[in-house]
Image (cartoon, rainbow over all chains, first blue to last red):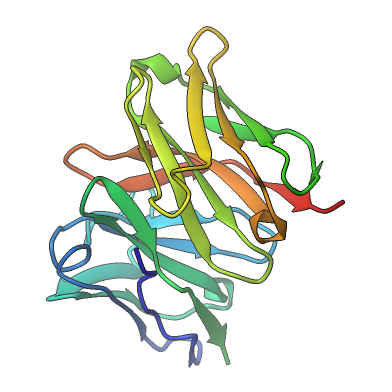
Length: 110
Length: 120
């Protein structure tokens, strides 16, 4: 069970949009619509931002959106704000009732 | 509001067993959902350890399956993690979280995490 592949870092200026990719295989990302995304600020617990590829939890910010094409899922942050600077992790259900996380992406707001 | 809180020793000796407790408040764990453990080694990414349903069904990370056990005590609204034969590689912040796994998939909310260091 290998970790899903994410870019190590992504940056953008305030107000811009950025996209983080999450690449797996047909056994996880490509095989199921069960990709979720988590935001983690330093020293804090992860927070659910997107689930089942495109859904936002109740009360979640509409600046965050998700999508998927083949074996790659993506998280887009629109209208980038200073508070969005954090680490982001994707996760996917995988075959045999297991779950796998991504390698993580550090988002920097310039 | 559902809240989770991890507790347990912060220091474990190599070859011994790591034991952690997750106490859930604001929700009865016997009402549904799965309950999971995830860890994060210092400066590294997240690793799913395993999840269980209150009726006993468990799923484990294949890489840890031979050493891990997750159990539950519905009377105390707690669930537990045991990881045996630990090494320095098991040093990590351990998080517990509520998990949805049937027809949907997410971990939310998470506990604040507890650092466990494996060292003699």
